Length: 180
Length: 167
Image (tube, rainbow over all chains, first blue to last red; front, side, top):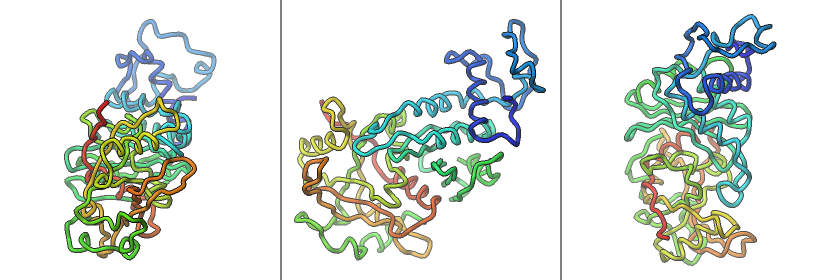
């Protein structure tokens, strides 16, 4: 169920990443978090699989998990779900679940050679991943309608576009982020 | 889109050329301030994240700003806290600032302005107190999502680090 598949929705993808965190030891982390897409043999003492996992064709330790460097931003983004209306002053709104879930799914798909982003939330309910190094910066914005918009100002020059998050991050966005 | 101190930044858009209140036009050399209501908008080094500039506000509603030149420090703090929340226990963290000419220097590739910045006095608002030193920043035209993200990112780079209010 939690195997990362090209057919999974962003929400399920995010849930898979969260499960990986929990499986790895909850907030203490990061000992059990493994590099992306690496298969591991279940260590001794691994809890028995639930019926759900046992019936799955894939074992939980073969699923895709987030890199260690992304654990803090993952947790910060997840914590935004607790925000309530008014959190950012008069007229501000709680964050859209779909925006946060898309952002978490995006992080789970991000290659581990890209710098770790910072989580950012807006009073209009949207969230962003943000990178900044001096005058180089990048913002990836997750809207409630599922659209993802980005702008990268890197050593390679400016790059921007918008897309629907499905099973892949646009390669030109990933490449731009590597230039930050 | 680019950020440049070209002549375009020294001129007014038609919507900026008429003062809406008694304090007059926002001059190119004038500083404008954005209230930071929540510490989650801050990075570890005190600089800001793009969340302090909500996309919807840039694109449609208008981003609320203040004109510190026309406010004492105490007035700026009072108005900021009023924006932060109704509850007296919730107070603003501080403000970030930027010169008007830098904001107006945000231009499209065809040389037209990306955003407009004009005075917008608050009078008889049901929620916040009157504030003649209120201003708005808004996209100069309807733009796609990625352009709004670019504007927000460039504003993050243009605005100062947080200036905290003294206790």
